[in-house]
Length: 288
Image 1 (cartoon, rainbow, N blue to C red):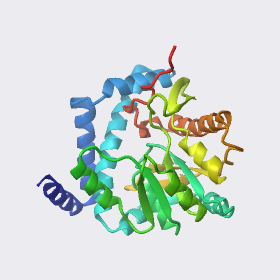
Image 2 (cartoon, rainbow, N blue to C red):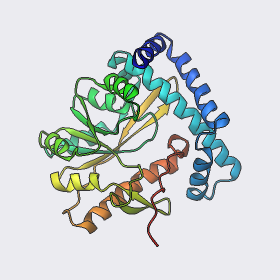
Image 3 (cartoon, rainbow, N blue to C red):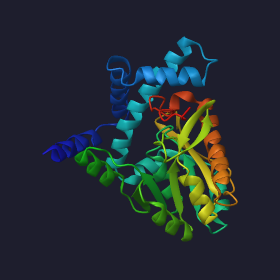
C-alpha cells in the first residue's frame, strides 16, 4: 500500500512545473533546517571547526542555504527521474569533457571521484549522455518500499547501480570493458573498514576502495562535481585525470586516498553550502 501511495505522489509531482517543484523543495529545506532542525547542531559544529575563519553569522547562513539546496535537490531529482531522461540531460551543461575522453583513451576504464555535492543524483545522467556506460556504487535506503521506487526511478539505459558491499568485482569488470565507475568518497566509514586521512584538518575515516580499485585496474581517476546554475540549470565540471596508485601497498592506498580527499576538500571550500555538513563525516575517531 505504501509503495502504491508513494508512486501516486511521485506521479502527481511530475505533473508540476519545475519552478513549483523547486519552490516546494525550498519549503522542505526550511522545515528540516529551521523548524525540525534535523542534525543542524551537528552541521554547525562541523562547519565551524572546518572553516574557523567564518563568523558565526556566516556559518548560520551557509547552513541555512545548505538545507534549502538539499530540499531543492531532493524534489528536483524526483521530478527529473519521473521524466524522460532527456529532460535532465538538457538541464545539465558539461565542462571539461576532454578530460574524460583523454582518460578513456588509456583503455583501462575510468574511476570517477565525486562527493555529496550539488545535485549529485542527476550527475550520472549527464555522464551517460556523453555516450559512455556508467556503473555507480550506491547504498540502499533502509525502507524497502522507498528504496525500490528510488532505484527503479534512477534506472536508465547505460547506467548500472551496484550495492556498496561486495561490488569490487562488478566494478573491475566494467573497467576492463573501458567503462566508467562512479565512486562517492565523502562518507564516514566504520572502524576497521576505512583508513584515516586529513579532511579539513581533522582525521576522517575514509574508504580505501577507490584507491584500491584504481591500483588494481590501473584506471585513471577523474574528479567530477556538479554545480547549480541560474534558470534551473546545472553544470557538471570534469577535472583533469589523476594517475592511479603505483601499487596496492597500504601506504600507497592511504596516500592516494588522502589526495582524493584533498580534491573534495578544495571543492567544498570553494562553495561550502553545496556540501552536506549534517553528515557525520568525522563520527569514527582514531583510538587514543
